[in-house]
Length: 365
Picture 1 (cartoon, helix red, strand yellow):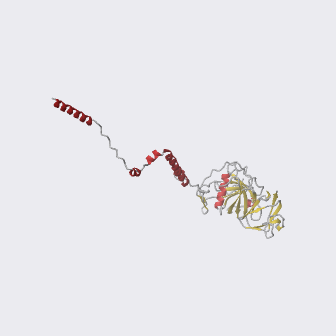
Picture 2: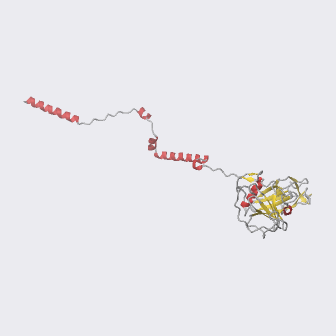
Picture 3: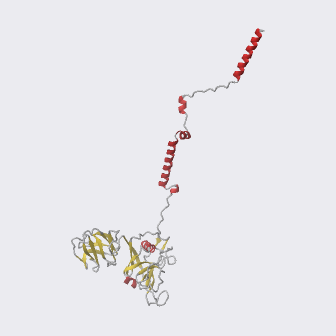
């Protein structure tokens, strides 16, 4: 019996140990990865961002900034640069233009025009300050050569039979500029509201290319405000009165100046301008400037200017060297020359080729 009891006790103990071992969890086996293998494991972009969030944010901002800067400089995407508008162009053979002109004149500048005709020159001063669109249109067409060779298509003289009505006319005017598109240049322009009047010597638009010059006081015959007045005749009104139907325009030249032509310079400028026709100074050729300022001489013909009077040279001590010599300062058609008057004084200027030409430049301190 004792041996049997011991055997049973040992059997129960063995069974209990086996049951205990059967319910124990298996312990995981951790294998150490060699250091060399751990270093060779690649990092992903996401892991870098997670590891360095601040630096990653700064880098992203810099990258975006560089991309935006490149797009801006190259005109890409939202920064695409629009091509600047191009100026209109006229065909001088057909006297038509492809579109209306851009406004390119400076309203603060002074613009003069000379209409050279077969009968002589007509000088104009254009009103760029109050009628810039109207003046700009004339300047554009003139510079394009639009008027070269065109006829005066209408001539009215007071009391004489009009070619338009076959009745005695109550107007005095000459009109030119008939274009190849129904009498116009092929475009339309909305001019300013007219503020001028149609007294003698006015130049106004009949349409976008045809202008007329009043050779008599038409202020009662033409309804006020109907045609935009954009300038005045300053010389050559007698030439305008001699124009006959179908007389031709040779060309129209434009002069641009920062200073009031043939007058005292404005406060913003440092000089004045004297314009010359074929054989005379245009308008008032008496000007006043300060010492060190300039006078721009614009030629409409062939001249030799000197200090003196009545076509005779007379040296002046402090006069500009260019004019203070017996041979004279030579000009051809269209020449522009700038002369500096350094010393105060009153200087008489004449032309060796045209003795009747006389200008006076007064230079103050």
